[in-house]
Image (cartoon, rainbow, N blue to C red; front, top):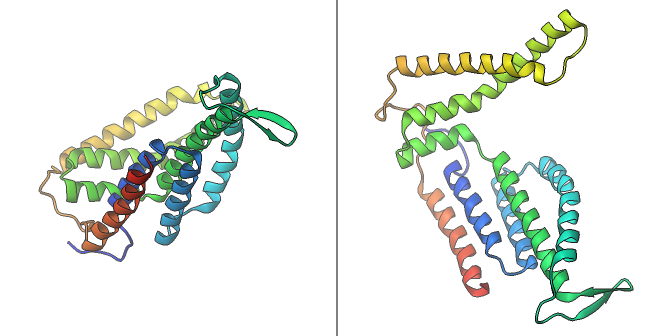
Length: 238
């Protein structure tokens, strides 16, 4: 079994996803939520995993739902015991409802941005290999997940074949429901062939791996530093 040149273990990155998500969930103010988003994105930049174009597009798509959540929250929230009026751009706002609405909207946006950015940053094949090699994740389940992840390309090519056949028969692209049954049949055949392949090879928990995804001291140290840097501010703030 041999290793290869790579950065941080994807299992550590997977753990950081949950850590930053929990940090946002228990943050007391919207300013702290923004802080965790910025810090999480800096982590991805340091690791060379930030796909900033996709994250930027996703953030822009979140603007309308975020603004809608803010307006809805402000209109339906009741005044708190510490409510007082403030004037912004010549309009009177209730301070308590304004801050709570900002908190709800920014927290939802922060959770979405962190989840999406780490979702597209993780290499899922390496993650599954790391789960099997480090946490004794069942091999049969791991390879079933690998089949599921790799089936996306097969579904896409099958969809194109069905579209070409429909164009030859009907001279136009049919509605989406036309593809449902053929795609289900194709997915069933693909999963059956993959299951037979896994079963015939007799995969077990004792199998060897060409690609090593063992956790190194550097990975554990990086995770510990991040945990310390997240937990200490949360203890102080919450």
